[in-house]
Image (cartoon, rainbow, N blue to C red; front, side, top):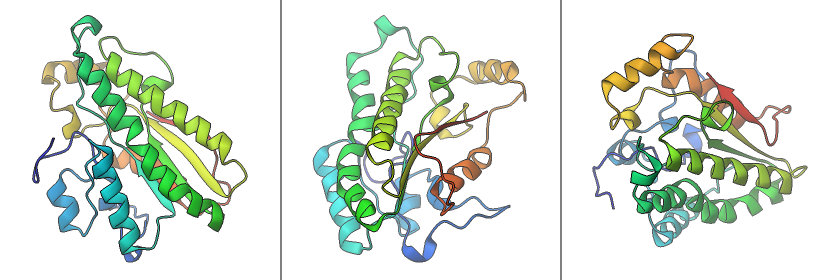
Length: 231
């Protein structure tokens, strides 16, 4: 399990204080959308919750409820380490960890806060998926692809169940983004991938944020059950 100060593979849930609610800006990426480490979140008055065990998730939920008010928006990003390897050489534990972090960690969080959103007839939930859920699926990434498709299935099911309740539940599926999450991939592989893209580069966080902000906004035309590709 990560110790305080360790960088996470991808950020856990970050719930901003009411006074730091989402504010779109042309030249500033809201910090709560992408934190590189536990230290960054704590320094910004965030709530850190490890998603490695249900007990730790439950403790995070209790802290959120205690600080109040309950969130009207949830952005779900967690994912295990990015591994490129043949299926037969991928550790079975990595598949289990991927499902635990990507999918099972969201279940108690959503169970805790979706009822309140339904009662208030307002809520926004966004799952950060991947372009692998729309279009060609790359080889040698079986655990990663499995996790993203599992998240997609949960998102679609919840969107159907809560349809008409005032809650919009959607996903965004960006192409590969240049973040610390790619630290396990060699520069050579990243350069090859960049060369294969129409733009000749990876996405930056700033390319993805506007789509997320729209789905978290008060837009009356907010879709439900959509999986929006960002490439």
